[in-house]
Length: 109
Image (cartoon, rainbow, N blue to C red; front, top):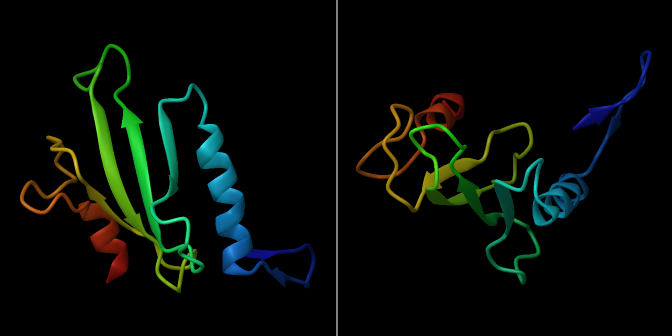
């Protein structure tokens, strides 16, 4: 991630970015319907994550809880993380056999 103004830029180290995201994920986002954190607290490279999404009210996903696995490769944040649903979910952007999200697969190419 690069930050700066004018002609200068500062590259924020990958782990600093992931530490910020870990802090936000553990606190919950918005109304608390999305949370995420480390899958293995001993993973010093911060690659394996888990997430939970609670389906929005008044939608076909209302009351459902979805579990996800995320993997942030060494090229993150320049390269999107790999996302896979552990819970069965009926969405066109998710491969029904593998649980992998098609959007991530498109950006990976």
